[in-house]
Amino acid sequence: MENDDRKKIVQNRRKNELTRNELSDEILHFVLKTWGSQETMNTTQKDDMYKRICKYLSVK
Image 1 (cartoon, rainbow, N blue to C red):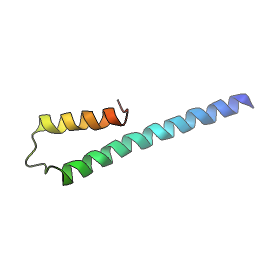
Image 2: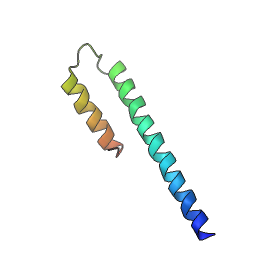
Image 3: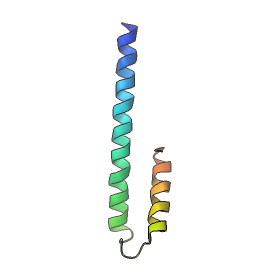
Image 4: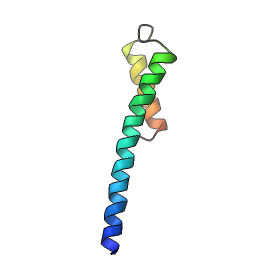
């Protein structure tokens, strides 16, 4: 029984990680679209913003 509980916890963690990664992509897309258009931001700025967003969301 304990083993099943551990499996569920691991599965839930994996689901949360996936959700968090998808969420970071959604947020980046939204930020790039609304806060600074892609024409006005160079690649370095986009990468920097993406890293900061990911760090905020604790995504590697």
